[in-house]
Image (cartoon, rainbow, N blue to C red; front, side):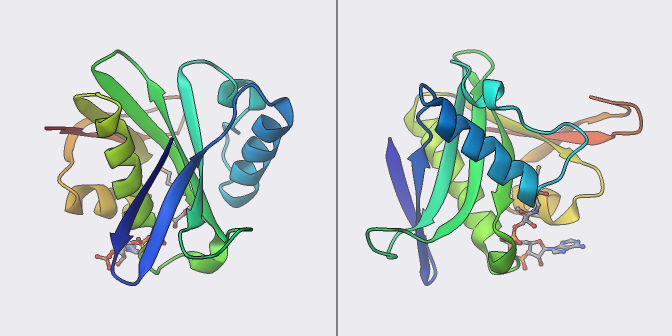
Length: 162
Ligand SMILES: CC(C)(COP(=O)(O)OP(=O)(O)OC[C@H]1O[C@@H](n2cnc3c(N)ncnc32)[C@H](O)[C@@H]1OP(=O)(O)O)[C@@H](O)C(=O)NCCC(=O)NCCS
């Protein structure tokens, strides 16, 4: 599924990663891990799992080949709740509003697929991402100290979708 959104001068669209294609899953995981080094690297088998939806983000007006702006994902937690994760902007494009744009695009995607709530967990020091979500109406719903690993502290932020 494709969706696009216009924010100021930049238009972008999401292109779903084909999870039945092992090479694409591997390429996606590698791209995310290269541009967002993490103590918990994304694995290709996660990208391939049936409850995961991973997207490349392309500039909408960049022609056939497409200019890659970033990546994002969500996982179905329940038929009501989708959890977004691994929103990554290509380094050359950071600080230009693309992170905000991708956050809006994945929210639209989740809403269009019928989920009623969206949430995400964010490392407590990741102020740009926390700021983006707060500006888009998310509320801080929890603090999770030593959450997925020791010394890895996260907030969860959530939003009801209407
Ligand atoms: C986090 C990330 C997605 C943000 O993307 P981006 O395109 O640079 O973000 P934007 O330009 O849309 O917006 C950043 C906002 O954070 C604000 N900001 C930047 N540094 C900040 C800080 N230290 N404290 C508070 N706000 C800050 C900016 O002012 C901007 O807000 P504004 O639109 O009100 O001016 C990008 O830096 C990235 O890919 N990082 C690596 C991966 C990552 O951390 N992903 C999040 C995983 S949860």
